[in-house]
Image (tube, each protein chain N blue to C red):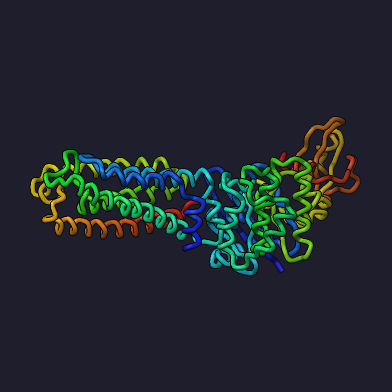
Length: 217
Length: 281
């Protein structure tokens, strides 16, 4: 597995994914829809798949002494590593942003960058992974179709998550704030997001591996 | 001992079917896998490697069932698909750094030796290599993990005659010690004449011959004559792929089928004319 992961980062990875990690700094922007940062993460992952396809990665990798399902597993691990790296890099910027511009009243255009936001982001990334990865591995080459299939529900999720927090007063008060008083409830959202992220990735891997196993290359 | 045995391999696509493909390759031999474009060469090779899923049949590699022992079998195998066109913008050294980790028997010393022998520069990018050099790079990788079976899908197509000859010489040197075997698909007849010990001929998804090259060539004769001679009762049902040529009509006949007292001219056939007549049938 480590050998395949090494291959993913040494050959298959695309520089954009790593450049986009710097976009965590966008959490310093006051009053901004912070989900956008993580949309770029998804875009970076799309570029990884696209570049790998153009480099004939699938046949190259499957020709090595590996199982097809491990090929998928390594790719899922890579995606998860990129996504978590984005999250971890974003956290100090969120803290710094809150320190510079403490905004107990809430974000004017979206949810504040607080633990609840990171929880909702993990759900968003899980949603992306569970649609994008298995859709891609249905054919192992239709990467654009997989991205389109994933990005539409992703957009709807962002609207829904932002909308509910904005228009449900109880949620607006507790989740769209950097007020430490609401930290416990926000941490619950973060924990729930982490559980959904983990479960989503396991499901994405299983579904994708089963589909890829059937693909004729 | 057979390094590769393929038995009753079946696979169907809309409009194309692999029909019980069966052949075997002994250690120390080079087998040319021939057939015209679309005959099923690539599908067969991919089915052998489980890259496409055959609907039936069995592949044994080094005495092991490929499906049940895929990882062990792949340790024995060097597979080159076309002109090895993966990761064209990566340096050879980077690709090697990845590939070497996957093989138990990888030997850096052997690899350096083949880099020198094939004049490959690890600091070059893959797309800076000619097609022939790319195949050599893929062979160097396979040789360095001590592969015993080399399966190559049309390795010589797109190469100039000198590079082709050069590559065929490399194939011959691979099997010299009698421990390695090469199976390569091609539709270039001269490749086979230069280096193949055995041929397996596939037509419309079915193997029509799998034998030693001289035996295959000797099994056929060319028949030349007038239209009347070739359509005589003695010949018309035995003749294969009749066509016009400059001085009359020409067809192919199995050596065993030549009737006694045949009026038409009987001549030795070469591989190219055998293929042309069989495909015309």
